[in-house]
Length: 324
Image (cartoon, rainbow, N blue to C red; front, top):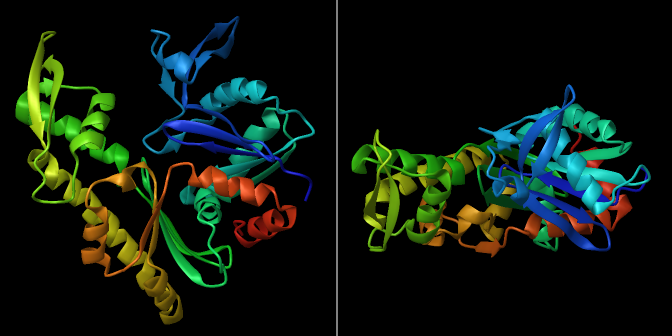
């Protein structure tokens, strides 16, 4: 395998690029403002520049699906910023379900002038970021972000896993719908995310609240409403119940030996939505697993750096996890 020295993760919210020996060289939003240059569509603004441009922007990933045409326009700008050239190689970190789109990711890189490209499930990089000492044992990783990635990993190989559409985005959408239906106020997804981050809880006796502004239903007038933890508690519990059920279903397919390892090591937990209040107690009750460990959102890119630093390990994990 030729040298691969950049790792790229295109997330629903954020795109990150890691350069071997340097660290994260870009972290920006996965959005684009497009326009026409002659008859050709081009990116006018990308990332935070697109968000603040005052022009309607488009998301590269919408409802869990990648728009590779938009991804090309966005990455064209981002690769220019980090100065990737034809001599460089790229490792794409993708959701488990996107491994069947490996050829599309490779063609995306080729169209951008990068000829050396590999594709790997991002959850594997997450495992390296946790600095697991004995990869020959089995470990359960759960990354709760926009969606939820669940994987059982043994010897740098995914034994079982899935992408589950429960997590941050679904919670945000349900909070928006609740406030619209019950309080008659229309709020943005960004405000719904703020509500989730500030008052969402898995503890029944949590009594926090937040005041928010939004458009009164079917008007252009603003109103202020109060939202409490108790009001959205049912939404939060339902989402994490669904995640718990998915975890149990995945580990039920594993051998007794693998489950013994998982029981010993517990859950390696990360992702923005894993920071919710009460998650340790909730998962302990639902999964009967004793150990919970948390790393920040950067854990995946930290792991990507570790893989890039060892070309032999990169070759091994790519071969072990290639789609047959």
